[in-house]
Image 1 (cartoon, rainbow, N blue to C red):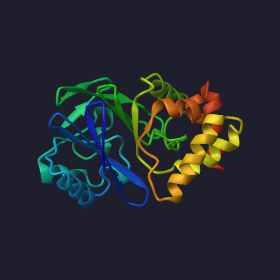
Image 2 (image 1 turned 90 degrees about the vertical axis):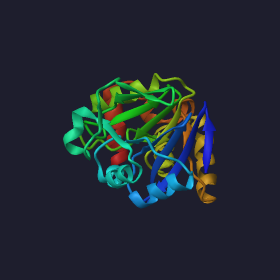
Image 3 (image 1 turned 180 degrees about the horizontal axis):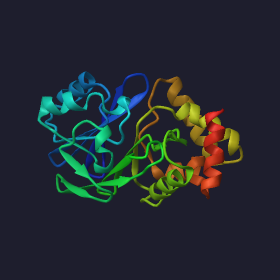
Image 4 (image 1 turned 90 degrees about the horizontal axis):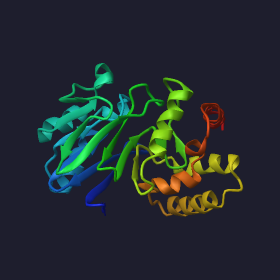
Length: 243
């Protein structure tokens, strides 16, 4: 099911067990974010009756890139990724550096570096309206810190936090229910968090998705976005890892 937002169309594409890939369109241009499974990705693009211009990769983990080559080949699309991490990604047709942009149907598609989950992780901004954040940021949580430092991860989250509050976040996994349990344990008096957690419980009980979500909601409820220092972030990340 597609939604319209700020002149874009966004299609959430479930993959594997709990992954989300995303198909984004704007004025005839299309991009597919993090195809873990080529067959599911191809089906989704065909279902929308669309061509495909770009395959966007947020980071090198197999559950985000495994279908990239086959998907790009099927539609003669260009694979886009972080030039600094090219050695760990499928072969890139367009290798971008931090803050580089490409045209996307008259909109601006910008890649920004958001290391932390991996050292080469990036986020894609569509005209400052939509952010495909991969595993850097989840609703009510963030990715595990597999590579890099708490300082780098905290800087990445701060960078996302300074985007427009109306930015729609396209996250890489449906982890919101488990994230809500942890968030409530560390921020029990947050009324906005309580309301979001209740909503998430209802949605998941009805087998409905919790994503995408606006940044404004995460700024009020996500303990990792609300962490003021790298040290506070590191304590939260360690606590979540052991929760």
